[in-house]
Length: 258
Image (cartoon, rainbow, N blue to C red; front, side, top):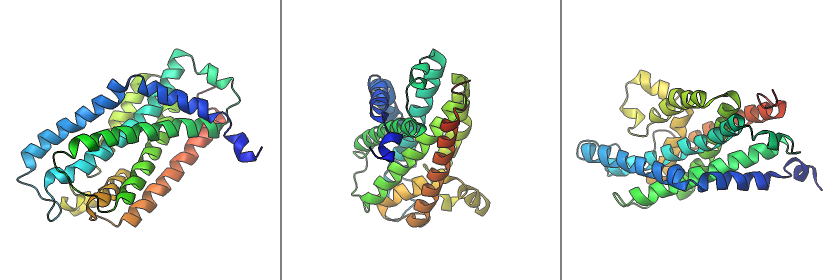
């Protein structure tokens, strides 16, 4: 048995458990976010379609769809890992995982992997429902897929950090409402950052979520505010940093064994 196999031993049952956890309540974890995204599209698209054109030849409704898809991916990937961990801590069933010989790598792969699956499932659902309002062919689907997977993995890892840190649901809600939501909404989901004043453009470029949304949108239209390669570098670096932090916290048993 190789060292890598030993490190990841047992991750599959935990991964399957995390998949079943959100899928058993899919009306809440999948259908509800899709409905929310459709409502955003109907309201903003209806009001601004005739008044805003961000990219030449691209209507505002079409421009909005990739942003809404990615916003749904990010928020649901974060919610999956963070809610699962805090729920296990509060109900006390986390002890059943702690007595297993699962390594910190197995925890990471299972939780983040399930977060990626949930994020992509919700994102695909949003895309299938909303594309009916403004159908278009993807200019570079591999860019879209790459940013969707990397973005979901980043938020799944960040959700683990939040779940480890939090001791009650209120703290998870505060983390999401005061960090995740503002960074998501200010990432260019509803607008192009090029329409902002220079100062706020500079601020937006400090937000890693901006590069996720902008790179994902480049996969749809072949047009973006910054180079997709730059976005890929920023997102990949952010994923490595957050993953390293998450693995270090899991390895130390931060707020797990206290």
